[in-house]
Length: 175
Image 1 (cartoon, helix red, strand yellow):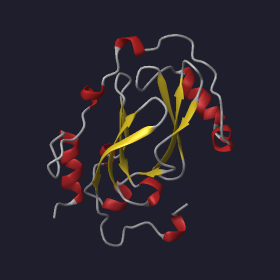
Image 2 (image 1 turned 180 degrees about the vertical axis):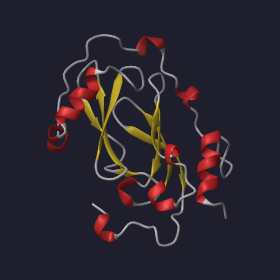
Image 3 (image 1 turned 90 degrees about the vertical axis):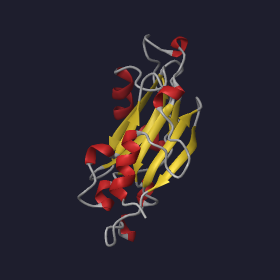
Image 4 (image 1 turned 30 degrees about the horizontal axis):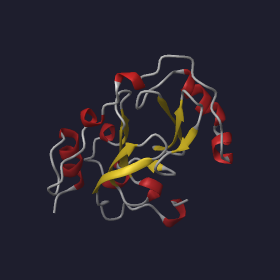
C-alpha cells in the first residue's frame, strides 16, 4: 500500500495511478473565443449561502476571470486550512455552487510529511479542469479531478488518500 505522501507526490508529477491516466490542464483547454476581457456582470445570487458571502463573491469577480475562460472561482475561508467556493459566469452573472461544501486541506489529516502547497484547489484561466486535494466536507480525503461543464462540475477521477491513524476529523467537526 502506498503512503499518502507518495500518492500526493505522484499526483504532483502527473503520472498515472491505478492504471488510469491523471487528467491534465492542457487536455481541457478552452477555445480562445471563450476568453473574457470585458466588464464582469453583477453576480446573481440564488441561495442564502451565496448571499451570505456576497462581499467575497463580488470582490473576486472584480478581479476578472481566473477559470475556464469567462468564469471566476470565488473562494473564502471556512476555518483553519478550509475553503468554500462558488463559480461565477462573468458574462451572465450566474453563480454556481462548487463541487463540495467545505474543503479542509488534506495535510491536516495526512501528517507532517505532506507538503501543504500540494493540497487545496488548482485551476487555470484557460482550462475547464478543476483539481481539489483535501477532505471534502471532512470526509474521503483524496485528489479529485473535475471538469467544468458550464453549469456544474463533473467528477472525472478520484484518487483516495488514507488519513494517518488518529488524524481523522472528530465527528463534532463534520458539518
